[in-house]
Length: 273
Image 1 (cartoon, rainbow, N blue to C red):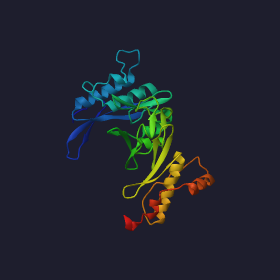
Image 2 (image 1 turned 180 degrees about the vertical axis):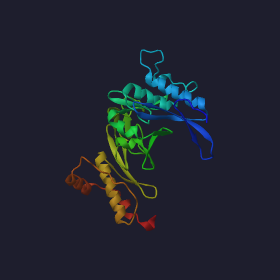
Image 3 (image 1 turned 30 degrees about the horizontal axis):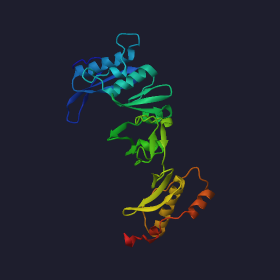
Image 4 (image 1 turned 90 degrees about the vertical axis):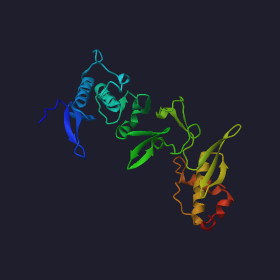
């Protein structure tokens, strides 16, 4: 039987094809480095991983994250980041995170780097971020979940309308950099000459205008009221009710009673759709 180099192990695919896995142990922690088609590539990945963890800043072989080159390195970029973070911060995560004192970087690629508050470290260290178009998702309970929801932003929120990056960096998700302008379902801010008002609308068979209001809270409550009107008319939809954390029950009831909604809503019935 062929003697394998240190850090290399054989594995078998479903079709009985042999491939090679590279791994190492660092401070009693077993770390998988990846799968390879040949022994040499797996061994080089092992040597590369060991080198990353052993080098110090004053040595000739010291590498940073920016030193990664896909053409000349055997480790994946994600694993490269994970090992350098382990080396520098003595923390190993399965996701490509590099920790700083008050925030951390999440490396989607060498050129796409997201920034998060340190309070979000536990969540993103166990949730892999995926990018589709200009949106970022994680897999949560078998579903793809937009990371905007973690910050109180609606999944369909529009940057520049519903939320803003204060430093104009769309990769900086630190909470101090996010200004959330509209966090309610069915509410759209409208910029007028000297102020902003808020339009509420609801989707039945196409969008129905509920009304335009002075505050986002009024528009959010009007949206809730529209849901109630439709429910009373026999319209059963899975609408998400707005929750207003800073409005007391008595204040909510007063606003709800005083708000006017479009008379058209009262005429909608299952037969009219």
